[in-house]
Image 1: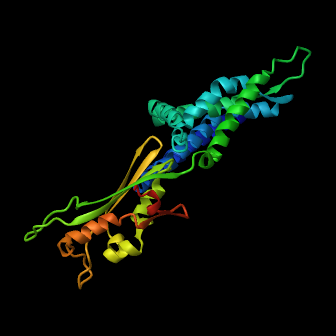
Image 2 (image 1 turned 90 degrees about the vertical axis):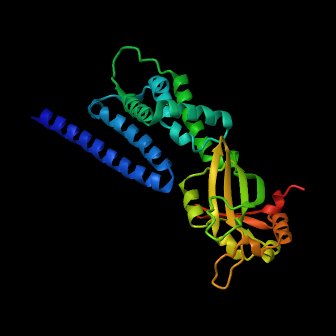
Image 3 (image 1 turned 180 degrees about the vertical axis):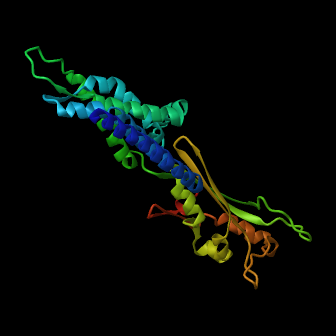
Length: 318
């Protein structure tokens, strides 16, 4: 009866772990699609799968704790099986933190090859191997088992190196604004209404960053106008600052460790009702002067409760 109850409780716990894990993962996926941030479900799946794997070896582990002897850890087993499985499991997370192009390509290749299911199975294998590597050494007259000190050193070194690299990532690979491009063009995605003959103009900014960890926080910042261009005196005197509160469009693209943020503003001056007038109220001379003054502004990033300003004059090419 005691063994029956033990198996019953273990089975019930396993089913509950699966049920609540899948349920919470589904909620995280919905939030990720809404916030354009895939990182939370990836982190949860890595942690959850590791815990799930450890749970599979829980009966043996409990039995081991009840036995006598000195607790030991099989470093060789964990180095050969656990560490590779752990790196595969963490590949999705590491792809958001690694900035070195070669390492990033390798990690992303691993993640896309194994996909979400493969990384989850690798996490389960890692959790199971970790707990299964713990055992008790029975006291006997037989010569003690080989300890494999190099395996212990290798395991600790790899684990410490990964943790240290992620912790110091912002210092080793700081975020850097590499270049700024500006121009004045015809408005995109604009439908000419009846009676109109002129397509409005718009100001376009493109900012190329190195090591910018783009995530859902940036999507929210674009929506809440926390990523914006603030004109200074000369540019503001040419056009009312209202246009810099009315984005014509925004977006981003990523290539390796380079990220490009783009922001566009419709050109116009407010009429008596506060609406932006068509660009035909601006002379060609004013439009040219605007083009020449686009760097007279600041790029403002308010992300993750931190504010960073970039003086665009520092990035103007002579």
